[in-house]
Image: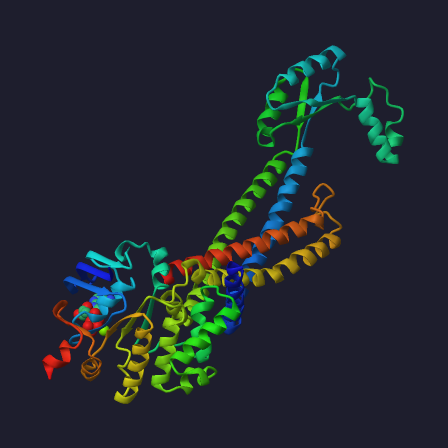
Length: 301
Length: 231
Ligand SMILES: Nc1ncnc2c1ncn2[C@@H]1O[C@H](COP(=O)(O)OP(=O)(O)O)[C@@H](O)[C@H]1O
Ligand SMILES: [Mg+2]
């Protein structure tokens, strides 16, 4: 009961203080808002990039073209050589007969159909292939080279550096994002600490009296911690709205994909709500962290 | 049993100034003690150590059996609830009424509103300000402001009331009115330690007087001794 009365008093004081030093509070709130917008954009970007990467990684296939005049026996030999390779996903090696490939071509266009329709196996200039998936995309180059060295393998094709470049570019984007987010959070925490510091200064007399009449330290600190928390919550409102409505609108505009159907955006629900929760949590934590720093420094308790 | 026991206390500030040297002083429950001496002789330093605003550099201070120098920072509030403090400049909240200023001391301790109300009205009555409860400090005279400060200091029923030059900003007549209030509080059982420059008041009240000089007690007059000696 007593704790609730003290708590109630603190919350009331914190709100009063936020509005009493309105311009200062507004500055802090704006700063959190800007930070959280950047955080939101970078997190959304980062999650999507992560999503692209996993989609692409899942889809990366090495195609090994076999000699034109290969026999069934040799085809089996190639398979035996493939499965012993480290990075080859053993359950994902698929043999594709050249006649099947021809059928695929014929299906895709009438021109192909007219040209290829009377090809026999011996006349068919296309090659039998193995479609091979790897377990680690980063090692795809090395694996492709190893596959190329296998007898009766003619040529090997895969994303050809494109994939690797894309993956490493995403990796760089992710790291830069992380650094920006951390830097922004630190700057915001300092700004909040400053706001709280000024609140503390403007309430110096009050604090002195509180200490004098025997208010416990936690009781003295709590209103300031709450104030930081309130600033954090206010600061996260606009970023949350932007996240929820902005991302949904963007998703609708792009119809859920970027550049090609291969690169899919993350569906807005529940993604935007999770991000919003994360934003308000960051806002509250940064607010409390900033204010407890100021409290520690300027109250010396 | 003494309420306050100061033994062999020395206080050297970080600046290197030693304000108190090897001081011994015992004060009994219910006493009224004046601490006098020239400016800078260490009076404020001495009483600050009692409510643990400052820590003794060496020696021991017991307040109600509690070793004040050993209290951890975060436990100081427990001591403060047993001691009321009044200053020369009143230290009131300018945007709160007399009532609110006094109530503040109880609100921060989490007392229920009804209990706060009855206690505040009781002390405001004791200091003679019941009819000015709704006034803001800048509408009160210096003497009235000091009474609000005294009311705030005693509203929680502390065992000790410490006053650092409470009449320093007041004219002689108002000072005497404040002394009447303090005496009334003392008669209700609160031990009072008052630092002052005002020799007239000290002579008039016939209480125990501790004379400090350069951080040392040079004389400890028993009740009535001071005025008879200096007349
Ligand atoms: N916080 C402090 N830091 C350093 N020196 C101080 C501090 N407070 C007081 N002093 C010094 O200690 C001595 C005693 O001061 P004080 O106790 O305030 O004297 P009084 O109250 O008797 O006028 C003075 O020389 C003063 O300059
Ligand atoms: Mg002094």
